[in-house]
Amino acid sequence: MSVPVIAVQGLCKSFGSQRVVDGLDLTVERGRIYGFLGPNGSGKTTSIRMLCGLLTPDAGSGTCLGFDVLTESAAIKRRVGYMTQRFSWWEDLSIEENLRFAARMHDLREPRRVVDQTLERLGLSSRRRQLAGTLSGGWKQRLALAACLMHQPELLLLDEPTAGVDPKARRDFWSEIHALAREGLTVLVSTHYMDEAERCHRLAYIAYGKLLAEGTPAEILQTVGLSTWIIEAAPASAAAELKDRPGVEQVVPFGLRLHVSGADAETLAASVSAYAEHHGVVAARAESSLEDAFIALMRGRGSP
Image 1 (tube, rainbow, N blue to C red):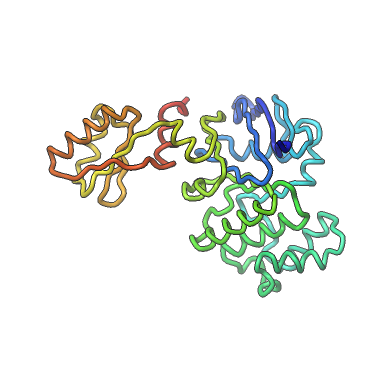
Image 2: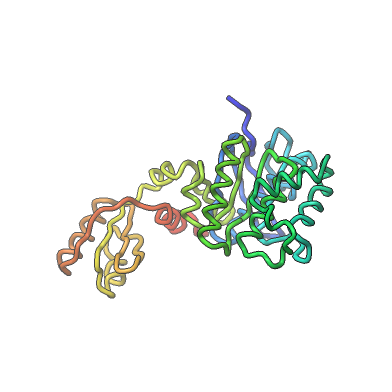
């Protein structure tokens, strides 16, 4: 088997008295898209920064790209592309000027050729002279990704890269990410979007600094073990009436439907069936979603 791109054990990081990451174990194989999920303040960004050499762990051990995360951060940083959550390039420079600066920063040979190739690869050639400050969110995102890829990194770290981006730009972005993964690039991405989580090969869910679940989307759903029902045309009072019934752990409205979930399948089925019969509404079993699973993780084990 190939050596993992990331293999760390027990990583910890505190700021003052607050433990932000608490005993992170993580293994990521080459060419995989690995998703980090969790609420704000859960430790996702801190974890990413420790992995790419921007932060030194307080405790733990492991390697990233074959280099020690505690002692060889400089070597890691040279081989990683890191796209921050906020657009961090110069808005009063053009796309091409920003990329030329990035090429000089990475001390690339033949920077003009590399910039031209990058513009072509990311579909930016026709906008090369446009000022970055005039770009939409989707095009700014594409420029940021281009700057991250110029030095041909072995690992790409993306911190909530599609926040504030329209659905088409998000879809185009993920198509590019999957194309890069097929070429052998490993991608670690944090996101709040469940549809994006489903596009990842594997997922890790972090809350309050701890890793609560890890695996493929299907494995996480199986581990959490939720049962879910959908109630059609539910009355306005349905959520309030159902939430305290035996076996009911979540009641979430989706338009005129209610998604009702719980870990005890038999008790949940009895409660939902009784409610549906009493009110004359239709209830049917459904597949649980990743969102259902992650809410269950927060309710069950994530709370301090």
